[in-house]
Image (spheres, one colour):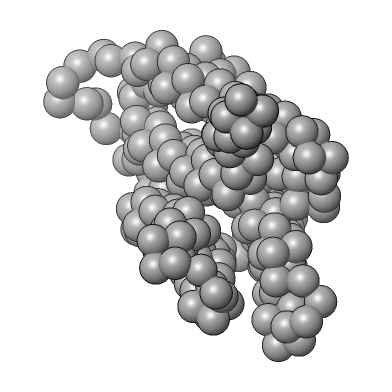
Amino acid sequence: MATAVAPARGTEDRGSALIIIFWTECALALVVVLLRLHSRLLIRGLGKDDVVMFFTMLLLLILTIFVTVLARNGGAKHLYDLDSQQIQTVVKLNWELQPFGIMALGTSKISVAFLLLRIFGPNTVWRRWFLYVTMVITFLVNALACIISFVQCNPPRALWETVPGARCWDPSSQANYSTFSSSWNAAMDFCLALLPITTIYNLELSAKKKTGLCSLLGLGILAKINSHNGNSTRVTCNDSTNTSQDSHSTERFDLNNINIRHTVEVTGEAPGFGPLASRPTHQIANAENKV
């Protein structure tokens, strides 16, 4: 394994900051998920979208645990400050955590698609077909990204250790597919954010309510904006030929991607808060009627 170039700023460990950021965002996402489940229980309306989003939360929790272990083992230090065994451990952990983050990104979008299916109902044929087809494609695209990550080397452990006779694909193959999958996920954010507008526009509601619903259901555009940075970082950080790359770059890659996933998680949960937000208003109205 090639020796990393000495950092200009000397020894630096950002592990503690990385752990704090990850667990803070994970805790925020967990609170949002629990609020959503409570909101749905109030109306006895748990659905497939809630189950899939809860599964997404579990993936994010596992991802955060992996990142914590990664940071504790030097994943937020420069490679120059790590010995060969530590470098191998860091690289191995970085590969192992990726499937959880990749699938969380896909399942969160599938949850939003299930939510839109509940909103649209059975009367809109083309929208239902569009959502079902895109859900299947999104699952396959992200699942294939996980598979490619490990089948690109034979045996897979050659990704993080020197294995005599091992054969690996050109690193650009996996990087190019990562760019494609990121682009597909970004396109899904746009579609899921804009699709409700085609239905809400025709509803017999006031302009104020239409604007509010479109804004609430269109929060996925925030995830799309956030994902732009992740797309540009993903290729360079997966380039295994870059022997001078430090693990600070890995930290930036992980931080960008976890921010994207938590943005998707939070924005995907927001539409489920309707019953919870409206409950106090209904209680006040009922009290006034009794008086």
